[in-house]
Amino acid sequence: MTGLDEFLDELVTGADGLFLFSPGKSDYDRMAEEEDVDVIVVGAENDVDAESFVELPVEFDDLRTRVRFGVEGAVDNGYVEDEAELVCLAGVFDDDADTVSRVRADKFEKSGVYDLFANSRAEPSVIRDVLEVAVELGKKGQKGKPVGALFVVGDAGKVMNKSRPLSYNPFEKSHVHVGDPIVNVMLKEFSRLDGAFVISDSGKIVSAYRYLEPSAEGVDIPKGLGARHMAAGAITRDTNAIAIVLSESDGLVRAFKAGELILELDPEAY
Amino acid sequence: MQIDWPEVVRAVFSEQGAFVVSVGVLVFGVLFSYLVWRWTRSLLNNAGVTDAVEGTPFERTARGFGTSTVGIISSLAAVFVYVLAIVLAVNIAQLGNPELFWSRFTSYLPSLFVAALAIIVGLVVADKAKLYVSEQLRSIKLPVVNFLPVVVKYSVFYVAILIALGQLGITTTALLVLLGIYAAALVALSLVAFWDLLRSGAAGIYLLLTEPYSIGDSVRIDGNEGIVQEVDMFTTHIESDGEEYIVPNQKVFASGIVRIRD
Image (cartoon, rainbow over all chains, first blue to last red; front, side, top):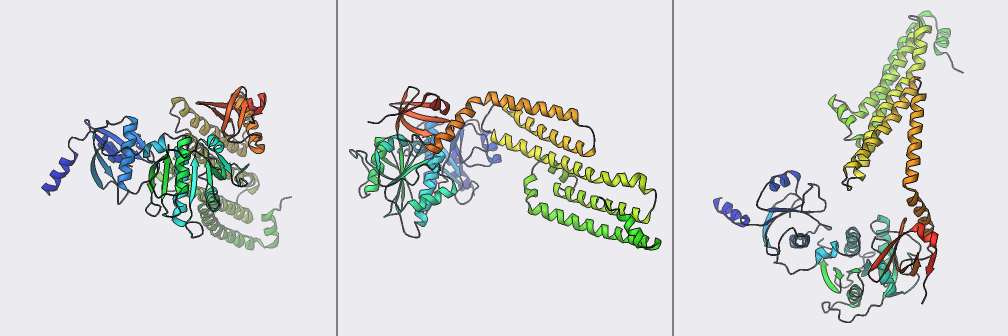
């Protein structure tokens, strides 16, 4: 198999950075000894105590999204240069690394998917929890029927001032946070209500049933998306919040930040 | 009032009968101790003790001897039952001088058992507590903090030894006084250290329960004016143009709240 060996050699020579996706301890130790290459660990947790680490808030199933997230995170943290040649080692079919790919750091147009999690007002774990609720809601729907939902996360004080209640707030004087299992059920039940959920920086559910009233001027979202997405895009442009939307019509989960569509996930594939 | 079982048995049966009964008691003791062994084992296993002690040094040492924590405790219970049976049998058959040695030994036996149990439980709990504390402090990368789990471990172990010694009837007054001083010092120290936190927490509970202001309201607290962004146990976050004040809840109480209505 000399041909294959040569090919692999060619693939990895001259790389400036090596991305390890959720590596095992022994793998990491072996790679970390390499002198002429920066080793960056991307994963849910830094179990190997790597110096350069990018936290992966969601286990993206799709390798493209995962690599993209890792690369954006590494560039953002200054671990690698913009023009660096990168080699990625990831597990696609299994948890262990089984795939090698090579990419240039500036190959991707900056999508801001790393920025969405790391540099938003709300804590990354809160955003992840909300995303998970939206994905689960998209998978199962509410009692089998597809539903739509709009979560506005972070900067809750400003969001509350730029919205008005449609009815009594079911979360008034309750102190519940996203991520508690019972709360996820509550959110699902309340998703049949019209209006948006407002969630604070620390994950407290401030209100349901909010009608968002931002100025939608100059919000540029892809044509064909409905009023819910428009409201989500507009509120994120007007405040420092991010918005996570589950579309009722096509069932996709989308995240908005600063008035722009950042992330698009298919709940079925996730 | 205690019933003197050997006396009762000897009164009911004849001399030879008593001997047969004592052999019977021995056999029954073997059977019963085996049952106790199995019963303790399955009880501890069902209670999830096996998983709970997993990874503690005591469990590892026990494994080194080819047994486990659950095994040791259940064997201990079985031995306890068996020794009781032997003592009972010997007393019934009236071998040796029962008055002198055995009667004291039998009254001593339960304490011995409890003492051994206290030591084992203390060892395991101490290690578990240490693990738990260091797990909680893992995100704080400060060398001094590593000292805390060890303190917790030896505190738990100290209490366990106290219980064991107390069971064995050894005077523990001095050690108890030491423990009292230690506990009092701990309470005093944490009161001083956490005084502000405690006051903020108490105020925070009131604020969370009654919600005089909620997220999105415009308020002025202690001269800081803005929109409430977050209310938690200890602090209130107030934000105005580009500035976020994090006000301790105790200040909210001390200075009062001004709600600003347009």
